[in-house]
Amino acid sequence: MEQVAFIRMKDGDQQDYDLLLAHERAFAKGAANRILESLTELENSLSGYRISRLDHSLQSASRAERDGADIDWIISALLHDIGDTFAPYNHSEYAAAVLQPFVREQCHWVIRRHGEFQLFYCGQYVGADPNTRERHRGHPYFDDCAEFCERWDQSSFDPDYSHYPLEHFADRVRMVFARKPYDPAVIRPGEREPLVTTN
Image 1 (cartoon, rainbow, N blue to C red):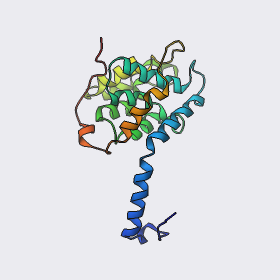
Image 2: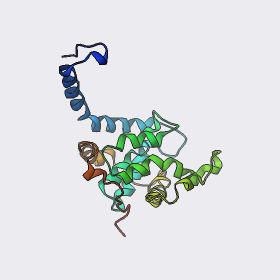
Image 3: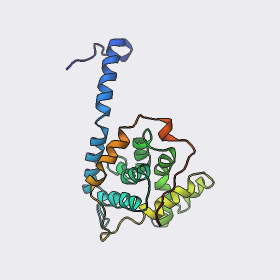
Image 4: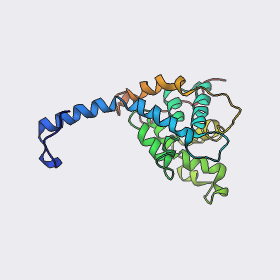
């Protein structure tokens, strides 16, 4: 395999960095498949719940789809806890960082803060302030995050809920991660889309 000539970045030249850029672009094209593989690892992640973390993610995304949510919401719901494996103390920020270049700003903001909003349901039992989310009160996406948690996150721990399998979402994951990173037409700063469009 062709490699750069340098052993220190400051010694690289245009040819070296052109080579690396080509490799990085090729590698980035495989991100969706690596993400799907990472999701399967949630099957053996954090225990104690009545369902696996993968089932929780699939339930969340299935609820989003059944509510008529758009692709950004559905994929954000699917990936919202992908950080549980590698970042158990800041899983929201981890998931948000993965999604940020490819989804609407609204969805990124909600995923980044959903862990704080989830404390509304359990904070008093885990030594945290249930009203932590109040620090964000007044933000344009506050209600979206509260609704995300109420409809799709906190309610998706049900062993009797019938959710779609991971393969059902795979093409949409690939579609989202094939977008041009940070495309203003996708990020749409300040714009909102409803979580629910069905009755």
